[in-house]
Image (cartoon, rainbow, N blue to C red; front, top):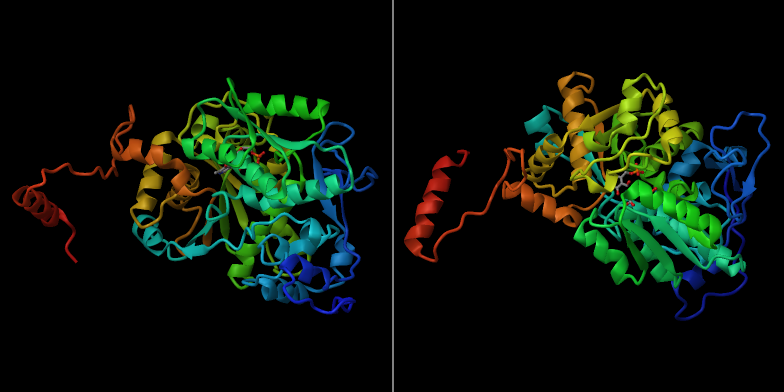
Length: 477
Ligand SMILES: Cc1ncc(COP(=O)(O)O)c(C=O)c1O
Ligand SMILES: N[C@@H](CCOP(=O)(O)O)C(=O)O
């Protein structure tokens, strides 16, 4: 079945921009989406328009964006695959974005004119050939680099959706004076950039001295109102929830289910990049736990709408210093207890009371998922090993790689299993941790893969001596 394009009413104009051009190509369809209580029983009738400002269900539970699957099912899997494939690598507004190239599955009803996008997504999925072979005996290991993005993390995928909806609400004269979040550094970077691009005020609550310098400077540079608060992320999250309940500030954390609609497109992209073949495993580092559910939802929609015929198994990887999901999993999913998150080099996942715990449990239970954890030494060693094969990953990706090491060693993941590790942020945001590691400047850590620079006099003989020493020890080809 073909989607009908309404013929353009006006002829192309000289010097029109891509937004203006998009206005002439409006497509008619009957796709829609609404908020419903997360994991509601089939007879539940509670629902809200996406134009309402609501983050919680009537009984205080999480919400989910529910698409009209019957309308989407009027088109078969091949239709969706070729539609999505046809939009990759173009500059057509808004489909040049990896998120908005799946607009019908994200926010079908938003006017393209209201979209705020930096053409995020379409991040590279690369074959980790040497790392896989050398350290894991694996032939089919891949890294989905969501950190190669506008603000350097996967948060851009969700933020383009949320800020676009806010843009729409403000045009509808809804009372939204600004957008706010609590953050460990990446959500705040994405929020401030997208808000700045749309001219919308942003307010960010950061735990003082707990995020990297590179992350701190991002919202400052983008003109956000930055509060550095003497607490941890969980404390900031509690405060922003109280503040957004009192003031007309729209909540941008992943408690807001709109964010996950954008983040789920990374899963769809993985399938698309494998020419719609399903990998065996996808490993995702988890903190506030929205992303693991977003991946589940993206894969599940592709399965339900006939683009693929199975689901991958998901692994959520946590830092041992902030591991409430891991403890819950190990208890047989009995009795979830938040923890006090301790300091970790994977600072963006230093979270003890994740808002999306129910979503994460649902996702993992429904795809035969696994939860693993990584100690500080394990995650830093894994990061250094990956970097030594040409990557430059963030510590959170080190957490995911540690999970992979453990599952390979246990024989759970096989040598030929197609496995995707999701790299969630750019390594350049976390250089201080790499400097500490390579200078062996971390108490109680042997830093066994450290590669410190050699200090040498500006003298030919001295330089030759150290070079000969190095070459004698270097592996022979
Ligand atoms: C770099 C990075 N990796 C992983 C995560 C974990 O994502 P989530 O909070 O959705 O579990 C976050 C944020 O929490 C992050 O900023
Ligand atoms: N790592 C996150 C923590 C908040 O997560 P969110 O997805 O709920 O916004 C950050 O960078 O702030």
